[in-house]
Image (cartoon, rainbow, N blue to C red):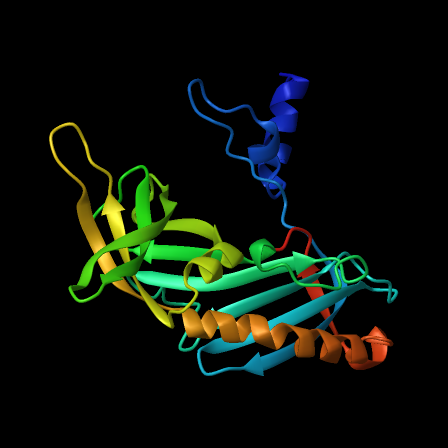
Length: 246
């Protein structure tokens, strides 16, 4: 009996790593299961770091394997006590910024992203609101209310509804927080037809630590520039993902 070419080819596809997932069509009604291959290439990474009372600021400049500048620099600030293996609940904040050193000598606070990660013990709504609240004092009556700077918080997905994320321009927050070192925040489930707003979590945001991170950037950028004239001599050669998560 002579086998058809299709029956001969099928076992070979199943033996090739990832080939069956990449080439065989999905079952009816199911989405494709193949994902883009993970790619890495050699880079030189140059880093400078400063530990502050409220967190750690790191600046990184990348070079290609032949020593050429590879895109822009990027900055990351993480709060003191940050553990990448364990999300801080109910709110974890981080600063992220990417710029072209040749064309952006000044630092725009509004271009710095304040990343907000929340986690609670119940499911988040499809869209929650994070209110950063500034008290409204009136003399001689004391605090009689507050205003709020708000941003949207979205759950990570149907697979993880108890954790969510949002973003806020750091410059907007610092302008709003002028005159305050700390501000209260509240995570809110917006009102529905049959009920009012519901508070899901609350806490305090350390604004002083965020100001310190911004103030440290000029000196760190000067230190990075002094370190990178010869990246092959002064920087570390590493495997770098093709699409890094900043």
